[in-house]
Length: 282
Ligand SMILES: [Zn+2]
Image (cartoon, rainbow, N blue to C red; front, side, top):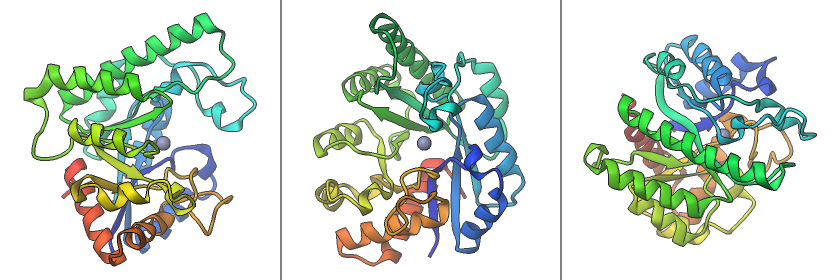
């Protein structure tokens, strides 16, 4: 049963001691993966990792909205991986020319507020929108799909994507999606807005411990469904609380199969075909 984990962060220090073992565990189980960057350093690291493998490990390069702020002083250890960076298309262009790069991501908007003063916060949000737009255009130029992160910012996200689509309608593919809303956690109404824009959505281990998305999962179009781990985060049941890894994407597939009342093989075939189409994998 071939699966593709469309979103994992094996490039973060959580995997520094056992990265190759982690990748082998997945590849041996016929699971391929897309290693997703959050800034220049992690994007470059993702590429170095992918280049060590003949097959099955792909990369996305991009600047995460949280990487625009220096959050190194945050107490939350995760935020220590986000340090302020200006988006510079040239340095990402250098990375993106490597054949293993299959997407620009993760990029987007994150309005979950940390310890920022109100005035600075408005400037940061403005900057997030500007950098996101630049990266959408950058992806279009390169002919790559986008992996989108959105937290507490769906109104701005929808209006920004609608403007983008209207502006570049002729250049965007119509026969397949041009991007994915990763770790989708919005409601049904929101999902349909994204489908209408020509985007797919991707589910993580979150659906293994919440029934919030069952109805959407039953009704949504087959060709817009993707799976991911977002490892090391979002660990599925029964491993919640432990570090996540690409191998465990099978639990997301299994849960989708249960919700839809079909076999896991059917979900595997469907989501793998969708990932291949989005990222243009052979
Ligand atoms: Zn991510």
